[in-house]
Length: 267
Image: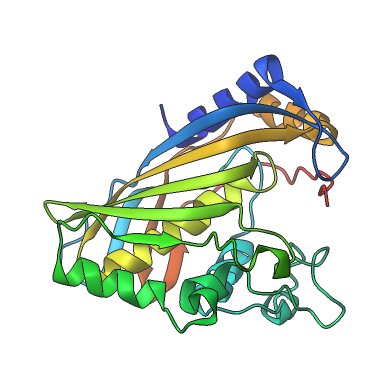
């Protein structure tokens, strides 16, 4: 199945068969355990070229998605930032509900990526060096879950583990999410992971290939059911968005999104 077919099927499965659960926000969810999304990027670039092209960037077209949101989060994450000023500068509000009045979030995602535990451990740099020096290594890992600093974070990381596997010059990426808001969060997470994979591929002279994601608590908030119903009703969607990536710049060539479908964020 295509990515969007997998995603739509998973939404329906959770609504029909999900376990009704209480949650931290008080809104309530229906959830399933350890659900997967498996995405083939269909890239065709020549190794050694700074430009990567592909036929299948995983962005939903049954509802409108904003590239500005995941582009901004990509820059924020990769630069190790912990303040939401970059989001404010781009009129992106996804972190507003968790930040202090000064815009701080504590040692969240990017901090653990570029300065793990405050010990100057740059996991991104180490990952790229490791892949370049040992293609077949089994330790091409980034871990964002740091128990020593969880209490200092505005929100513990939902995506917390990346592992990379190189085979015949092709880069594959495996992601573990402890928790996935399937309607509002996961579609943007998938775009973010893909852009991270493209970046790592460009820095290691590999060809991005397959992205596999495991979501341990794949859930739908009860106040998202109506919005999901509107999304599922969309039948005229195109699940094949070609793309090019060069020097951090992602261009989506033929993205034709459906309507904007809003839902309330559970805080």
